[in-house]
Length: 415
Length: 153
Ligand SMILES: Cc1ncc(COP(=O)(O)O)c(C=O)c1O
Image (cartoon, rainbow over all chains, first blue to last red; front, side, top):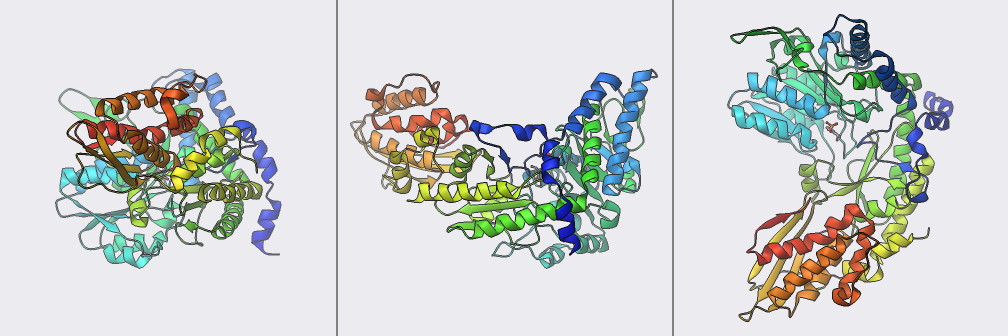
């Protein structure tokens, strides 16, 4: 028996589902099939408990008091940083900066690094499938600095050729900012050659890992990326917190993003000196309970095993694609293979919102819309699409229910 | 799989019919009024054209665009309802429809005054979809106010 099938044999999805209280909700009296995990994942009880425990026993402000609770809160918050560092393979804990989420992480890099180092004529390289949060911050800093945005295209059939990215990296390229996993195409981008090539011309690379960390092993040191951004709420943790990893030598050279408490060493009205990493980038009271919840979520993921989760999800995605492509009029966005947990599609003659409403009444939650990737929708010439996305607690039965409801929906709308 | 009652109310046969075969679909030349409507949430867009004669009567109304079944059916039914009406009457129909569609799902329906438009009121059970039904109507108000682009969110 292959390692792959051994892993999925041992995978006890029913036991995992017991850990997620919300899965018992019955929308419109139907069992919930939550297939909108790319938007946000649900939270296991241990994460909720950890946050409750924090507020019940440990809460105070961090890095400020000398009293018992302040020490407890600081220890809990900093422990979460250690968990994150080890989860993504950062060499040093001070390379982990807590932010509000992927969006703020990217804005931090664009404003601080971009504001300090971009010059007129410099190029910022993005791909056509970026999330708006990895487009708009770069437009803002391009306007301020006179840098230019260039965009790596897709092939006419929607597939991604890494050669196109390599060709687009030039002597003018200062930063390449791209998704590690696309939130629409689902593709796992082969980032290694891109990072290597970018470094050869002296450019830095930011990976948007929002759709990656919950579904695969991520090791930032091995990837050798310069920045890595992700959101807690997409990896079973609470909303309101996210992570920016940055190489220490880069973060040291970057100016602060926001000013306030915690990020300073000494303030006078004439001159302020800044705190060390990572605090230089964490102005104000941070989301402490959320950090604790995130740390617990990552421990939970590792207790199940990232390889096991990935193998499970791979089967579900393969089965989902197999069922969808058999339905007349369904057009898959992106390739059939090389995907993480996301399957987006369009249906000829049926609007995604009608599909989502229809499935919702069956208790099935999927996403309909532009998925914050309007340039990609424009590329496909569609205003919106539907998206099924799985998580560690998703089941084959849920995928079948979605496919059955979709077939029924198409019959109602077309004939 | 049986359709739930709410779904059946939302997607009544009349609506599906107007979705599959929208009435008054296309551009209108010459026209006197034109406006675009856009719903950034779902990417729906509509372009509406009116030809109003010297007596202030809407002689013809047409629309183009991409949208869900609800917004298409709403635009189709709206253009039917507008033809032959004065601008003042068009405003009244807008008010009446807008009031009805944003009212509580349990509120009584004045079917006599709404005419065929009552089929759109199933949307009241679906708060996230009300904007789909009202997009063409806000575009109408925009067109009558002199044109441009209107956005619903
Ligand atoms: C690829 C990608 N990047 C960025 C984001 C933004 O994440 P957040 O809204 O948590 O900041 C998302 C989530 O919607 C995403 O899928």
